[in-house]
Length: 479
Image 1 (cartoon, rainbow, N blue to C red):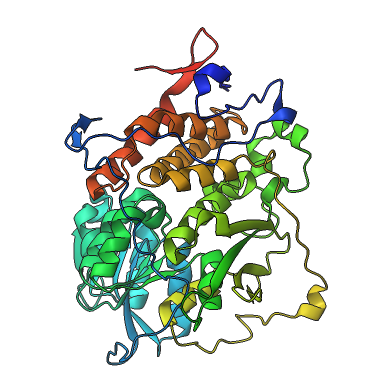
Image 2: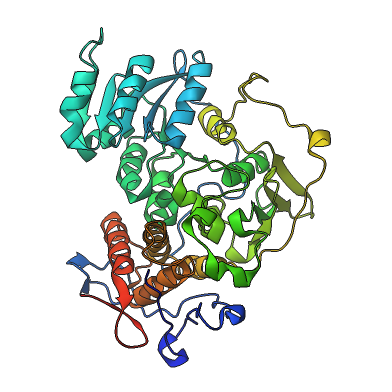
């Protein structure tokens, strides 16, 4: 297992790198922002991608919901159940979305499905929900999918590869597209859906964290609604319903604290992969469970909240709430605090993205009602910035803006992957992300194109993956 050593204070410039071996109990706080060097328009960099940033700071992108949510009049209408398409149908978000459709066939119908490589499950979904268009991203599995669907009494159109996923996202009959695909792979299909005028049920973090500076102006141009499916952002979205303009003062994001919320900071040097995968409240995939342990998930949610609701970073706060019953809160200008409560169940926010502004009645058998008396108590505490340096990193990246937030997210994803594969230690996750963001400071693009966003996502992953020990005292790249 590799361990990354720290740079000296003189080398670190705007960052104070972590030393997890001898000074972990004295970890310094990260700065509130990066030291940026602007670049002149037209300069070439990286792998032939052309810079689009100007010397002057660009205007921030318009938020998806500027602190309030009011349905349009007249509202969009359609015949029969609401037609939806699902990008990432075999993943956690996709399967839960289909559970909702199955329970509410009078409310929703599936017109298109796209999956990555789980052909067996995709075929079962096609047989049950009978979409008119199907896509499998892994083109080598096209024959296997066709064979699995050979006995169907109807023949859906099947389009392989990335183009198939894009066609599912912009299917002409769909009103709403559920974006459950993970990573920057979900960015192009989401852009295609927006350009086609589809509302977005957003479960893909990269759409805003990496793509916010490009995606938000595009959504504004096409009058497309971006509806958050994350439980925290859905809670905020539900709380801002009907607020008057300018009423939102503060956003309070709740965090469970993850697997190590009860661990002493010194003990984190001993963390094993199995330890990080034991989430106390939620049943999730490996990556997001590790993100909950490091609190990177909450840092990324801060950035996403900024893009969704237009709140300044100084007005977005993180609070540890171990029970995960209050999914997030807002404070209004008159000091009232509004909260959304519910059991830890991702189907609730997913359903609301699909039904908004309506509320769909749910069975008490499959959707148990919250019993506060049975629950007993709710508790809160401040997060520990020494224990969770991810928060300062995320706030710094968010304030830098542009491509920095996408680099942060991509570097974290790669670092978590390396940790799960036991190539780096738990504490090295923070180092890898910090070093990658630090390296990106001189090439930051404040108003990136889609090409630049994708380019720097790939760059960050490659840079993070190639961080390794040299014979000296600092991490270097192999290339």
